[in-house]
Length: 83
Image (cartoon, rainbow, N blue to C red; front, side):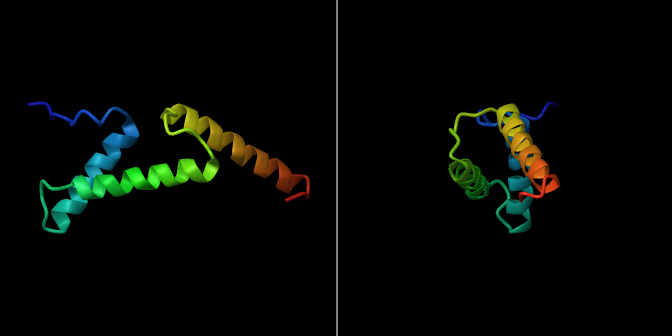
């Protein structure tokens, strides 16, 4: 029987968060009550997007592309002796 996912699990990242939230809730003795853990992941995501000044509606691919571009910039700066 296939696993029924909540509606908000619509990306691979959210699937991983949902799975971790279940494990953490179970380990803490709150099996089935993982909403609190998921809300912490959401706050963490929002804080990271805010820190970079990015919109909250970016896709996982867009976030990855932006982070890759930032890392390439920083690497180029270090190699050029400016960072």
